[in-house]
Image 1 (cartoon, rainbow, N blue to C red):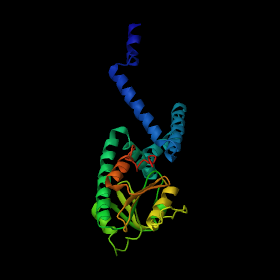
Image 2 (image 1 turned 120 degrees about the vertical axis):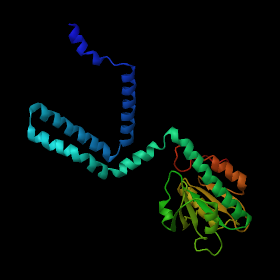
Image 3 (image 1 turned 180 degrees about the horizontal axis):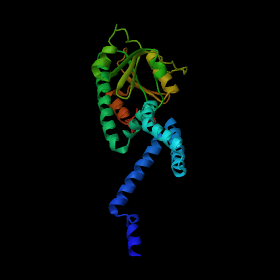
Image 4 (image 1 turned 180 degrees about the vertical axis):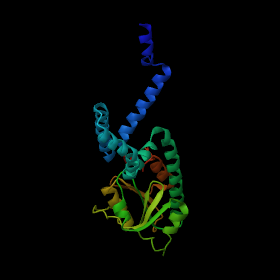
Length: 267
């Protein structure tokens, strides 16, 4: 009787086994969360079905089916990596958005804020007109396609160069997504709302128009008055100044490492 009991001692897990089980369970749970609503989830279900057929073939000694499935499993993993490369890339990107990495995203976003603020201060001081649209949850690809692609890191030097008078792209808007200048010279929709201030020009109407259609944060520098304004949520805030703009932008730093989070306008 004691020898039989000893054979089943492996069923009594120790503390190390419990830790391993907990880690593996958590990892499996996170993988399933990452893969839900993707083509990879259907693939997992298909693999599970094939695994069931394989074990039935072994149980019933169906050698031909077993051999075919073993060959499929041997080369299928490599094929899956190729076919589902986009899903795997997206899953790894989402892993980078966990709480552990959000602090690094905020640090990077503050660098973007500093670069934009430096550029806006220079543009305001030199009375150079500018309009900068910062992408939030709603993508701005539709508007970026109306301009010229840039795909360069955000920097004060590049922004001030783009808006230099007589440069080819100074009349349009700059589209910023994350830490990248996606496009310059972009055309934005003009608002149909009547503006009480008749001194507001096309840039202000375009900024307000984009903010009515998307959740973007749009910064405008007036070449006539050097005034800095912000459009968000269908509202236009005039003369916010550099420090006011910093407060607004720092209040919209990303919580999940993606874009800027729109907050309600105070006025």
